[in-house]
Length: 181
Image (cartoon, rainbow, N blue to C red; front, side, top):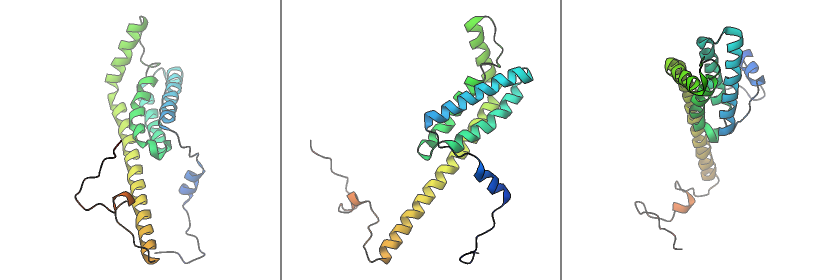
């Protein structure tokens, strides 16, 4: 049902609360830096407050993954599921518990990554699903805009070609010509 003109549809309180949250648009690198810095700070806090609990770190990793996927700009959606596992690896350094110099610390990080791979996969899956849903919604919105523009052009009496402007004169099935240099 549509609402009559002049009357606004009531908005749920949860939606109003979500609209008040910040809505940054991070670049791909910015999203990766946000996730890595946040996970490192959370891991340091986890080490101080919860004695390097892997469960606390993993549970905190899931919302960071979701926020990274929500806050990355539409042009960089593919970077969210890539930068989130890197952030997990950066964040696990303070809680891995390695001793004995650089080699011992690296071995502890690799072991922690292997042991806590479930959290890593879960956060990557969360970021991937959110990025995929956002991309599908953007593609559908673009398709709706194009259909609306075609309908508007048809209604105005302008002929609308279903092909892009550069391909309108080429017969179907013929390959595009290459430019001569």
